[in-house]
Amino acid sequence: MLHQRCLIREMEKQIQMNRIATAIARPAALCASLLLVLILSSCGRSAAPPAADTSAPAAGQSLPGNTFNRFFPTAGDGYSLTYTQEKAGFAEARLSRDSTDLALLSVSDTNGNPSARTKFDTASMEVRGFPAVNVGNNGLAVLVADRFQVQVRATDANFTAAERQQWLEKFDLNGIAGLQ
Amino acid sequence: MATTAPIVKMIDNLPTGDVTVRMLQALDFIVPGEWQPVRGFDAMIQHVTNESDPQLIALVRQHAISLYNDNSQGYQRAIWLYNTVDKADAALAAAALANQVGNKIGFLGFLKNITPKTTDAQYADFAIKLVAEVVGFCTINGLPGDSLGDFVKSLTSYRHEALMRMGTLIGVDGVLSLGPDFLDRTLRGLAEMGERTMESFPVYKEMAPVIPGSDTGEKMGFMQRSINDTADWITGLVQQAGLTPEKMTDSLGSILDFSKQSAEMVAPFIDLTTNYFTLTGTQTTARQIINRAIAEV
Image (cartoon, rainbow over all chains, first blue to last red; front, top):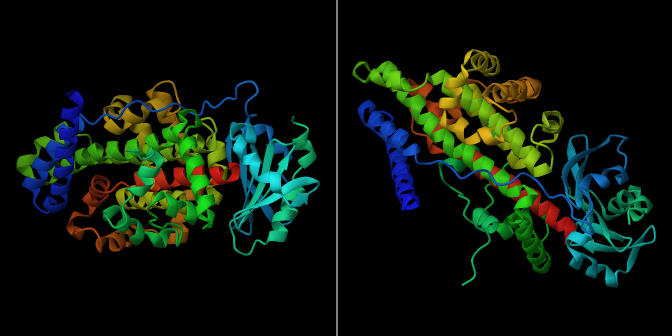
């Protein structure tokens, strides 16, 4: 019942806010609308915030994202890397040059999503001896040690397939393989 | 009947032509070309990944849904942050407007005694929204909530909806609401504002659990540090976009029905009638989930 009353009040608050939009030029009407919004707002408390990132891996599950950072390519020569996500089993960085975003570089632990390994069963390419596949038109991925997927995805149309492979080769793939 | 996954529903239901969308379009000059009103989850996947293969999109969609539904990943918390700061600021804006009305109209003078000072409300609003952005960034990226240094470093590479959100915060809740010296004014205002006053604001009550700090004093300290540490970047954006209160009023005047006579009421009026944190925050969260999903499938 309380929830329903709050819903009704939330609807009433919206109606009042719409009235404010038209009453802005009429002080008395504006005042009445504002008072009602103030009163109705007291019922609009949100639920408690959901949990923070607590995705610590269980034994035998994905490795922590920060495990992968040291195996990413080194930037330089005008290129820069900005790390954009670090979650359990996943790390991602954005490659850019002269303020232009070029690609997203990532390492993921397929223990968190084992079906991702399937596409490498029929891989016809290799990068540094690891099976490689295209992911759509813009991504190139390798599977390292049958577990870690390393991917370079172009976010700029001028970042070529050859450059994707070059940047994939700049990862310390053998180092990642040693994480097993 | 199958129910639609929450993240899909949120993106599918994003507005494409309401007053928030029109406001963001009018403010495109602050961060040219960074924001687009993409609606529909599959359209968002295509937009973010630049892929069109239906099989790949279906795979990404499925994995993105499970990433969002796992509340330990922090994406749900980010959505909560963006929604809550937007909803709660409506009450604060109503209080600010009521105080303005009380100041200007004799027989309604009692209003100024039962509502907080407009400026205090505006300082709190700007500071708490900035902190929401800091905490939202940390949550989505998997960092502790008080990683202010990482946030500041990443500002130079802010893009898309996130940059639009910061541009709107600076333009609307900063320059338009408090004038060109909004950073100094807000810092002074926070320093002079009592903890009781801060605690009286609904937006603070809602957001307090996620603002770093063990009590109101420490949380207000984090707000001040957030402003201090981002001041250089913010000032740079103000100068680059040539932001002035007049330019903001002119840009928004075409889409919001207000007169120049009520200019000081414009910013709280916008807070009441728009929800740009919710709109762009939902897009930012979805973008990060989609980028991760296509890297993991």
